[in-house]
Length: 92
Image (cartoon, rainbow, N blue to C red; front, side, top):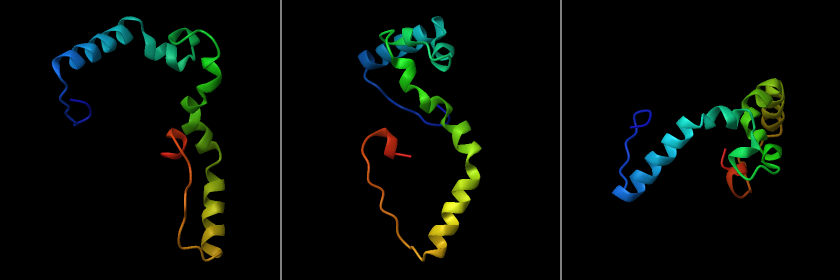
């Protein structure tokens, strides 16, 4: 169970997931991820594309801008928004 959610996996998939979780725990990989250690992947340029790790702090630093945008949208009389995008960057 994860945060009140439950899941079922076939035995083979469950074993693979559990093995991966054990590997991440034993290798302290969560800490390495937050430290942007490229060794978690190929050891190449992965640290360059881990900016999403700080997105919360980045957005909080500019939170007054969100209020300004909301005011401009409201003042402009807009009632609908169309978001175009693909992949994870547009899912939020």
